[in-house]
Image (tube, rainbow, N blue to C red; front, top):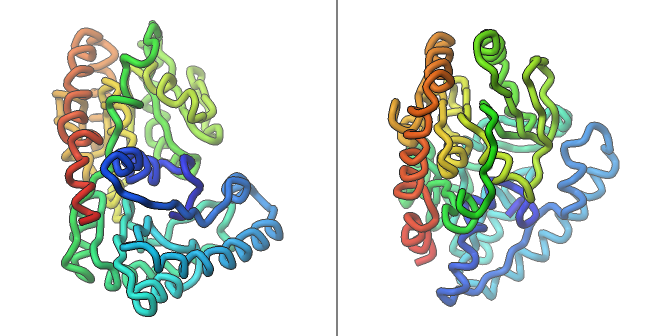
Length: 349
């Protein structure tokens, strides 16, 4: 695993929330993140170049010795990559030298360049093409949606869909939190690297604000660069994440229709809907499967469609409430830990 336990959404909702289930079923495992908590904290800061280099070099040193400890395990579960930069030398050692069975898991089009502005100078070290090699060496591939599966099967036929899922009982469960918010809130959550998708919505929000009294909330690790009179920025915190999302009346997920977006696993829509919040999203990739247009949310391509969908929900609060139950039920049935546990366990067989 690349990131510290409990820090990254991709890890938390791909496999970490199954760990207690695995323990209960008698599996024994150990977690070995590449980044320490401190390194993860400074990774996307501007500057700190020397500190980043020293910490990454030290992490490689530790990782090398961890590889050989894998001898005592039946298989190795790799989420995204063993190390964040360089060719797949460590993965090659695992597969070809130590002859370990590798379960390779990913939830994005990680063979495509994608990096934060803070680390632009290091992006050439990422070696994105290593993904194809790891796929060939893996015993089994766990991919987050059909688009990713189709790509992976070029290199390894033993590829299955393992969707990103939500714990609708113990975490994304409205019954576990207070929900007394009376404000009308259109909301978005995500990291600052994906906030660029919101630029498309700014003029739409401005136009709607001329007629409706609502708040546009952005939950992220950094404040957005655009300005809106009704904008409220909320710093993302794991401790308040669910309560903050539960305050949304409507959740939005705009995307551009490109290869990277097609590889995404609809995580924002899953979070919104699991809490009974209707989602409005771009009809890209797996969003088309998650959202049933007009029943638990809307799929919108053009500026006019986005405006009409938001206008409808803002002017019809009763219809919005009806969508709440539909949205949550869809996630429970198709994208929850409960519904996907058997599928996840089969990865380990």
